[in-house]
Length: 250
Image (cartoon, rainbow, N blue to C red; front, top):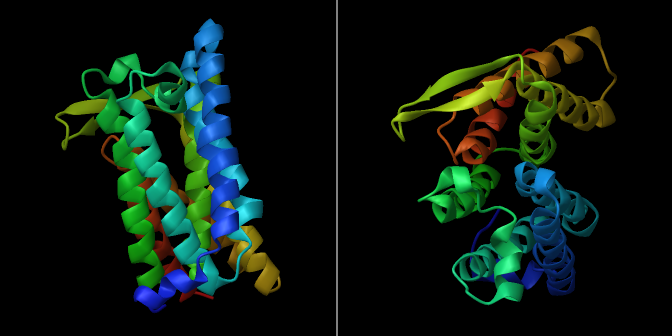
């Protein structure tokens, strides 16, 4: 896909505006209200916001033709990151509420870093992936991040108390807590996303099911082993590469 100045002629500005209002602004306010009002919600509002925004993305931006999809998503994401960066550092309650839902006490003193890093790195990786891979593979990886990674942490909180384990994080010189339940959530949704996108294009066969399962296993491993805050970037870059290799088996 050509990435010159003319690419911005394809930006769907009205859709971008609707996405920003319904996504980071409205959903962000709702999630921050939940976190402030409900003691149980603090562990979930970060991911509720993540999943909510991805769900909003699907009917507003993800349905666009490929030529309009990338520039619109990149512009929307860049503006969203700017909004979050300002909100995370703002002392005005209404503005700070746009980011409050995702600032975790457990991340202190780097809570703003671990809030903004995943979004910035993901958006850069998304642009790179579109240049490297077929759009179908990028879309599979995108929705793997949206649903699989998005639901892994909430599922882990709910169902992972007896099956948690630690993964060494050499980048940050620490460890990340994972769970079998959370990993299973990534596997299931990665498998379903691959099956949906490829099932539309061809007849579902035993071989296709095997390739989708292999992709899901790779995506689950990538998510589990990624450094803190960089799992979205790792998935959007390397999951399409894994699927591209597996497609040679079709």
